Image (tube, rainbow, N blue to C red):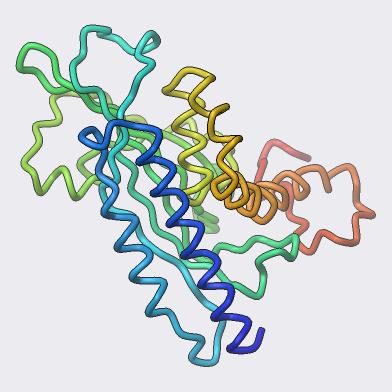
Length: 250
């Protein structure tokens, strides 16, 4: 990838993040949001230069979204229920749109928190990339599992938020496709909001274009890789390590 093409690539990713911010501002009451981490990510991308390679990425710290569907949350009387997203990754632009694993380093966490009668409640999940070659335990290359908010929410730790009491579980590590911020928004909306919220995004041309870009370059290679366990003749797939994504495959 030449320098000119790399700059266009970075500009396209920055524009996608701008669409995400604009879409969220139109979707929710802005007093319930914290979106300035997107501005910081865009600023970081604007400073990305080729410098002889095609490595890029961004970090999101403390992006806050409201939660409107709490029927599956106990206690249901929680007030001000919110989701906080923290994530960071580095990737190789040369592997983007190439049916390959684009991520070099990767981490994404969601923390649900709320308050009730002066008590604080929280629960955190994270998706990470962990090959763990020296471990005696199975690690799907990308997996989702529980983690405590104190580790993965530095922004709220800085606010001296009392996380209350929670059980910490390091297992099970469930295989899950990686998400960037765009796919991560979809993950949040399809789990913590009514169907109509995510469905309404499908009419947002800029957002859906960005979503499909991420879907085609992150989700598609992931699932094609798993299917390659049975379809070994797929020549377009550069990345064929299905048992790394799903250790239960034999």
